[in-house]
Image (cartoon, rainbow, N blue to C red):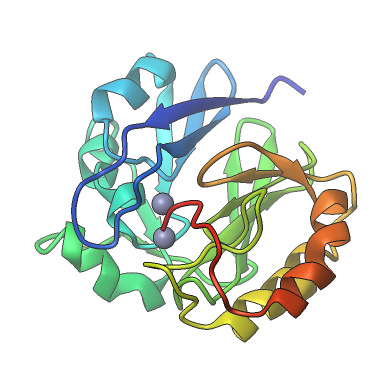
Amino acid sequence: MTTRIDQFSSPAAVGSGSGTDEVNVWIIGDDEEVIVIDPGTDTAGVLDVVGDREVLAVICTHGHADHVTTAIELAERDEAPVALHPKDRLLWREAHPGDAADIEMEDGGIFEVADVQLEVIHAPGHTGGSVCLYCEDLGVVFTGHVLVAEGPVPLDGEFPDFAGQLTAIGENLLTLPSDTRVLPGHGPETTIAAAEKKFDAWVSAGPVVTSSPGD
Ligand SMILES: [Zn+2]
Ligand SMILES: [Zn+2]
């Protein structure tokens, strides 16, 4: 296995739907090619990490500006496609009024890079088109705003669909192997086992936001 994961902290965007925290940009690949998950806002910064490796695709876990602002610009260098779930098209347009994404992701879709596969898990709640990307080969799941170490991520101080988000976490993420690393859109990584231990507390806390890990 020569595939590795690089992380880049993208400065927070200013504007509608953007959070106040740095965004975790994830770059998965080998010495030849990469896929970028959640490109963020800093094209030059991401390309610094990518180097001369070919960008095969730019995947957006959801449509919020802090995650997608540089998607088109970043994809341009290698004419890579940008992937987004169609249910986040309206959010995407706030950052990219004139450009559409190239790939409409759906649940179960597969991306291949280097010697691994990334599987699309549709996990609506934070937004209708939120997805996670599961890489069984590397034992990691990229969770965007579906789930961070502190729990499910609210939006502007509230949960648009708390029950849906919890269901997506319970049915689609906690069913993954418990030693799977959770690499989120903001903040430190966690594991499925750690999330499993906290899940009941999240459910009983209900959709009341006490601290926002960014939206
Ligand atoms: Zn964010
Ligand atoms: Zn978001």
